[in-house]
Figure 1: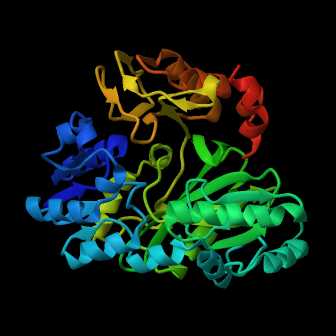
Figure 2 (figure 1 turned 90 degrees about the horizontal axis):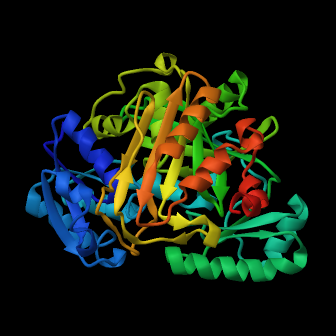
Length: 449
């Protein structure tokens, strides 16, 4: 096992990783920006080092500063968390050159799965169902028009190097195609430095279902079941649950087996997630996230497996201690993302000082957070301040437990989406699991009144 791990991230995921390291007897190094001097992750790590100003480009995306911190502190491994540099193959490669173990997949697997167009072709060859569309990048509007005519409108234009809902445009009619491609390419270039786009059929009203994977260095791959992430706004997830409430055992096996084939096809190692669109009794590969996911706690509750500790063990060269037959899903877990934002004002971020804070507890309740009373939420980073997770033997009990936990959750000094989340989970359609990825888009008006 490693002697010292540097966490190249901030917020609740940095705190989560620090605690996992402590349970394994591993010392930790936190990095922080000047805006995060009072952040919890910087306070609880064994060591902490400032890597730059508030700007992410000068701090949490500053590869030279982060690697210099590894050198200064003697860290022999680095955990990237999610976001920031977590899926940057060049960063993983530079870690290796500096003698620092990157706790994640290989740069080659990242590149293969990070390029969405290439990933789709890899999935076809691995017999994983994919959404009909272009075989790779579309080179011209004329080529895109020909493919769109073949698969049928509506279609989606997607950034090949994209993520987080950026560089995506829906096209319902041929006359909208050129503008959509131009806009998607411009946004992709701005956010990812790569304006490549591909085209695929838009699946109407699907569910977003993802499968959690673990893979060691010796060819062993298992899946830990699936999560339903369909309650999302503008491609950003808000509520996740495990298992998917509408998936049959037969479909669960098919989807899990397909995800394992996907991992094997790209030589994947460590933790990762394969995301699918589920429409009726058909599912299609959407993308693979080569990192830990925000919503990993729901899977941990249902399987009893600590995914972050498994990441550390795998990166240290250990064998997976279980096979697929050893994985059993029990009960139901739901996660709500608690954000400092105002839903009634278009979910506008709400930076400021938390003047009072009460977080719920009790059996089956987990809160991953990095905030505390008196903490200053800055405008520089993501607005998520906590993840609230509820677990119970059944979905109905988990929903009720989550509703009471939300009702007890108190944050003063900044606006939050807690009341919105409570209203959402009390919605009859959500309670009946009758929703898809378009649910919030269709109902956001009444839910924010």
